[in-house]
Length: 303
Length: 303
Image (cartoon, rainbow over all chains, first blue to last red; front, side, top):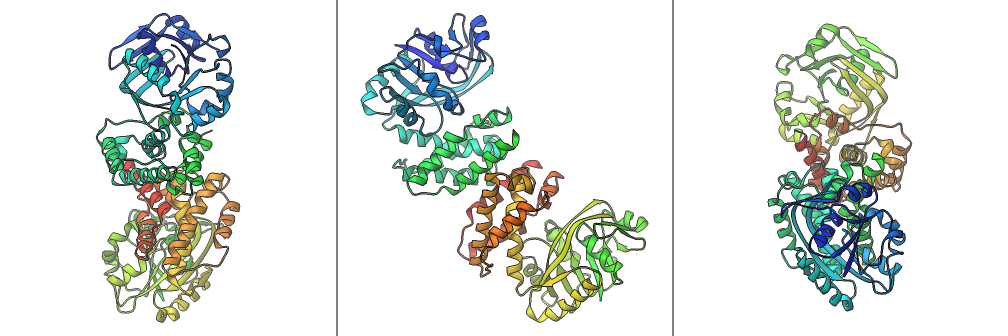
């Protein structure tokens, strides 16, 4: 199968490079970084071994891109307003759209725009950054948990899983996409937002009694929201995730990096959509709503 | 009656100077500012007319201070841990202790320390600052709402009211001290804390949909906490106070000035005591608890 990477950043740049390195055909969309990648290739400094792709099929516009089998959506969700125009020239009968974004509801929105596309969702557990144009730094982890939006597309996802495995990327298939999306939010909602409001990394938060308490309260609200939407987790999940966060290396979540670099934060899909989904299911998530309002205020103020 | 001012800052410096200017006998406690006030007097630049007190009975230690009838407690509540030692040499049978601080529960604590003192509480509606040692700037307002802790001390409070009136300070007597304290918290809890977390003044908060919403949610929780403690307000109080805040001149609450100057914030009496009182009355104030945890985190982090 042929792969097209929509967004050659920390996530798309890494997985696309791994796929090409693993022998698969890959096209990359890059906009601001197009010239650099065209002339210098794509460099990946990885904790699992550095490599450079000298020859990269890179494009600056989707209009020029050839046909494809699988589109990896690895843009920030803040760009999703323009996703229809980006996908339109690429999506044919049966094209797979594999959404590697954070948040809730992206797959359903894309399904509404392209009813005959085959839509898959992936949760990336990776610490990576784009250090400069065409230069990705992969610091830790790298696995993907994935599930199809519709069960009928599970065989397709298994084919993709085989390609990723061949390329050295671990992929776990999950039963239910919505539950998996909420599970990722369990971490993202507390620690992305708090890291911005408190101007702190995970270690600083978890070493403070109040920071720990805030994380726990928010996480428990995510559990309540998920449950209202029919998604439940194992007993002890909150405590396990707090403990996992407490012992992990100090980490600045992506939202903090975005805020500090004056990029738009992923508030819509990481906060507003889950809040709306919970509300529609009859549950008000007050602490999360408060955090979302604080973040929106801070974003607007920074402009 | 003779007055003793415990804390010659923005509040105590202003009201003490007004009382002396009005012909009353006043002693001032000043610690870091003692030398300046001793040699240069006390300067008040006031929107109602500037004046300087050339001769001030100022002391650097309560041990040296003469007997008094009324002690004005105008220290920040962050100093209340040392209040017993400050009051002990001054409090005799029947001494009046008039608490001009923000928060909840100060009067009850002082009553527990000095059971035979006559304790009064005052809510100051004033915009004033200490610009430098011995130099107070009074920007706006200036009235005090007051009530006795015990009803039997209302005649004493009326005598004090007459002295303040003579000195040109408007004082309104209220029926119930606890309700008055919660009423002041209605404004202090949302806008002090949010101004720190959002790094914004009142105008910036109230012009933002999210800032307004945060203020309203927090204020409604204060109403719920007050109600649980038996204190109720007129219908429409929240909307009126939001509107009052929306139209007032841009204002940085005292907690923001404290935080920005790396002084300790008044978290204990403005947040922890009201939270504890509401909890004891059976109500969890979740948004306020979250704000309090954020503020505590920010304070500890700044150290």
